[in-house]
Each structure stands twice: as C-alpha cells, then as structure tokens.
Length: 154
Image 1 (cartoon, rainbow, N blue to C red):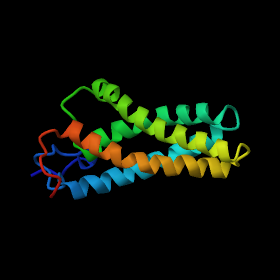
Image 2 (image 1 turned 90 degrees about the vertical axis):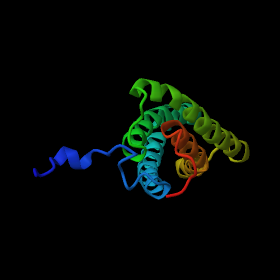
Image 3 (image 1 turned 135 degrees about the vertical axis):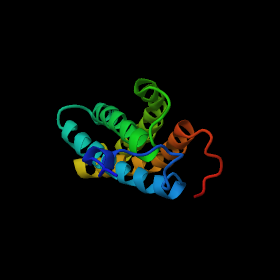
C-alpha cells in the first residue's frame, strides 16, 4: 500500500466517507476558518478605515473575506459542494448581505453615539457584529452544502 501524498493529507474526504462529517467536526473547522476570516476582516477594516469611510472600509473588507471564507468552508468544513465554485460564491452573496447588515448597522449605531470613535472602538464594534452574524452563516452554509444532513448531531 502506498503512502498518502502530502496534498492528499490536506484534502477533505467526501462528507459521506469522513468520520468528521458530524456537526462537532464541522463546528471546529468552521470556528478555525471563522476566526481567521474575522481577524483578516478586522485588519483590513482597520487599514482601509484610514483611506475611506467606515462603511466603505467595512464593505470592502467584508467582500474580500466572504469570498475567502466561503471557499475555505466549502472545501474544508463541508467537504466540497456538488455545485461549481462560482455558484457557491453567488449564493454566498446572501451571507455577505446578512453580515454587512449586521456590521453596517453596528457602525451606524456607534456613530450615532460616538461620531469620533477611535479605530479600536470601531474595529471592536465590527468584530462584535460579525460574531453575531456567524451563527446564521454556519446554519445556512451547512444547509446549502449538506441539504440531506438531517438532524444536527454526530
């Protein structure tokens, strides 16, 4: 029997064949990807904020991170999808709109209460709203990528 190649170790097996196909494994992988995406979103937002308005900086950072997050979750969390990658990215626009609504609303509220909020406070506000939208993201991604998964247990 041959040894697996280094790329074979990185590839996520089909969900039906994987012992990690249950919700626990998915939550762990989703969490790791989500933390990375959120950190990238916050770094990009803080950087863009110096060159543009908070709302534009948030939207631009969110678009970049949604594309990367969806691709990573499609591959590693949910074992790929039967749809083509571009179709999955098109569906992820719903996720983008949900997260944008949460983060844009939080920024709007922040600027109503503190129009001169620091980058740190604005970034923390965006991060908090992003965390709230994450629950919705997981449920929708799981439903889209594994529509026949049935009950949400291992």
